[in-house]
Length: 167
Image 1: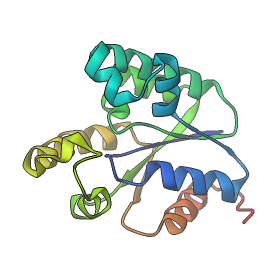
Image 2 (image 1 turned 180 degrees about the vertical axis):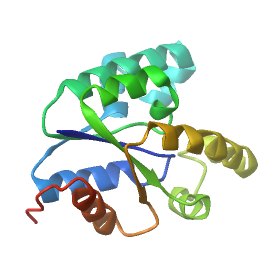
Image 3 (image 1 turned 120 degrees about the horizontal axis):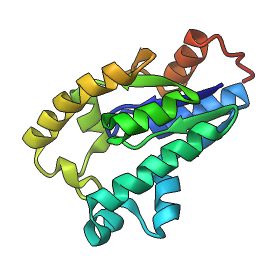
């Protein structure tokens, strides 16, 4: 079984995903990294130079490829679960877990807006957060609280999915 983690930027998808893979002996893959490999450049630059649609197409391909893997924890980009085609691709080979992290905690984690352009304006980031949250909830097979420590969230997911914890 694969596990696909979704949630807003700063929700902890990559950190929790790496830890969940470690404690269960599963593999780990990040769809943003797969999309960047397909495009040959970082996501931000790809969106700037090739356009958002080209990035979203690469993201869809990354979701499809990740879902074909076996025994893998998949960390998705913050926007991946907003698109039904990505959700359908992931559900074809994974249980989707929404890491539901309060916006106030995300703001503390994200910190400076320099590395997260969407956080240059907190009001618009909050609007986007609220818009996306309902889509994450609709996509999710399981919802876990994202305000705890990385290890606690990873253990909660393992417990919810009846996975054997090795570490």
